[in-house]
Amino acid sequence: MNGAHDLGGMDGLGKVVVESNEPIFHARWEKVVFAINFAVPANSDEFRHSIEKMNGVHYLSSRYYEHWLYGLENILLEKGIVNKAELDKRTQMFKEGSFGETPRIENPNITEYFLKLIKEGGPSDRDVKRNPKFKLGDHVLTRNMNPIGHTRLPRYARGKSGIVSRVHGVFVFPDSNAAGLGENPQHLYTVRFEGRDLWGEVRSENGKEALYLDLWESYLEHAA
Image 1 (cartoon, rainbow, N blue to C red):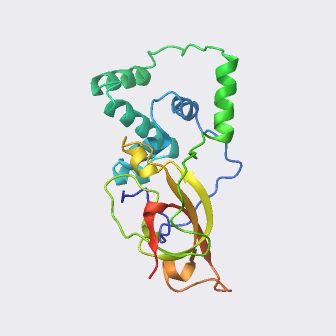
Image 2: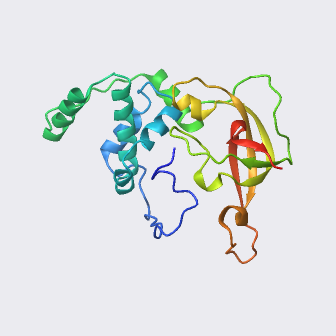
């Protein structure tokens, strides 16, 4: 969907400030939010789309794990796991410090499972026997669309021409998976775009910028 989260390819937003010796977590609550993410019944595409629903001003003025917290809360509310009153009550308990210590349960098997998941991620490739629509070297054109739901086709790359540089196989389609409409697996391609085709005048010294994007089959059509 179009929103403040889709900042790729934009400029004029100021210098990116890199924090020296930045810690993995800046506060304990960030660590807790990271852990809670693995307990919420939602796939990664649902989670991304939930964050995209944040108010634009809120999104741009909040920290990274605040985005995560909003996304997790929104999923719990939308799925009816908690209601707004319950969430507000629990939030107030934390603010007052009356919640007490969180119980700690040691389970080596669960710990090993989640450590593996964090390091390697969950597989999204699917064993579907289907011939790809495009092949290596094909000239393709991305769709010019403005969906109200989740998509992995960024705004700056819509309606642009590129060349297929790799055919990966079949993977879960995030647009439908985020909306609870099933995995709808499709072929995934790496497409090479010339910088000048995306942003116009090339500003580098050699004038050879190129960008590679992984794009699903339904985002693409054969270039005329």
